[in-house]
Image (cartoon, rainbow, N blue to C red; front, side, top):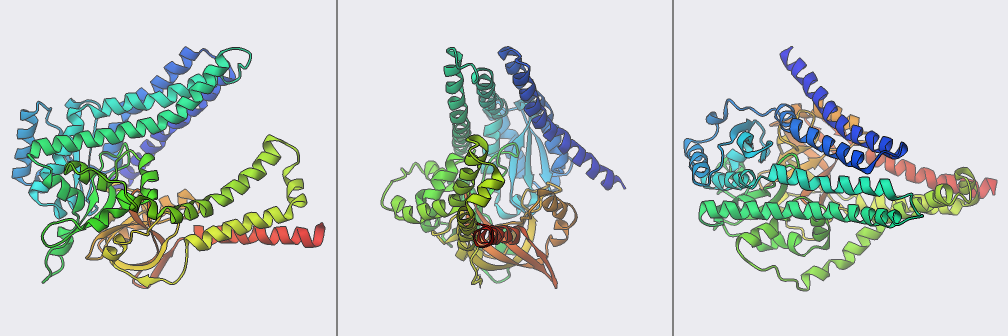
Length: 512
């Protein structure tokens, strides 16, 4: 019964936290509707940001099930001594140490100021890294505490909010100079979002450098950034250890820890071909611009002081990148065309537009089908994670149809009780399995009531390997024993696309 009420409490807290975002949106509308002063709007934005900053750490601790009274059962005395000595040497307040019992390797820090900082690691991280690598990861997190990154990022994240308020307060005043100010503020608002992300990436490099200073060199952090599966190898008897690993990113207030798996050979040397995607693929550059964290390959190169050369590899995949982008964006572009004609220009109503342009509707449906079959092809073959990670032709649009077999070792977001995504270990590496449904609530229900039954079970996952800021596997269905858990959002997309084609043809043949 206690667990039930704890779950209810967690859900209530999440709703409360998300409500502040809704409150900001509603408050912004009120400020604009009743023509309140700019200073009131700015004050309101600052108030919302401060409230989120103040209650955020408490929410994280409860929602992610962090245990603060059992860390000494999992973390070695040597590592705990390292934390204590490093804090003394670098004048860092000793953080409160927490544990999340989850096989997904993860670590993060959170808090308000250094004096109340919390440093959390998962049991999965402790399983796959040796003690020196654990120290390097912890040193990276201590760097975030020392550099006041909690406060710094809160202040920086205020900039887009304030610029947006300035835009709203001036965008309709075309008769005076305030209109120009409003346009400038809106442009700055759009740009500032990318600048905030860039600033966050810079803080990651800064903490990497701090860890390198604490450890005396970048070797252990580099290995930790690359290595994931000594724990996997130890479960396979009579096999030499092989390592694969994830890209360490900071806290759950940002991107969480992104799985970005690479391999080490038996001599602990990186196979550089597995970094090619991060360093050369055009999609990698696009995703990094939109991420709070640098690409793993670039972080490793920075630790080694190796300059990243731009050669023909950067343009070799440009054709595939452009094809992916065009096929992915074509349905959106056509849909926007309908919206502009019917809502903005208002030349014609929506129903009249459909009746008068049946071929346009057919083309729209056809573009959706093109994207569907391009992205989610058939011809599923059984592949290992190591094999998938070696594919430098992977993209976030065109999936590689695959059958993946392995053991579920954790959730996509460690400790998050409603996390629907799973992490699978097949003995050669680990992979995030992306479970999708047409409605988010269905994903949440799966995370709440079904995901736990997969833990430490052998599964077969059929779907498509893709790669964005991190490698991931898009699930078509998961098979455990004789039960199948199917994702239906792809089916609905296909039905909608065929429906538009049939609708357009029927109008053309029988009405026009």
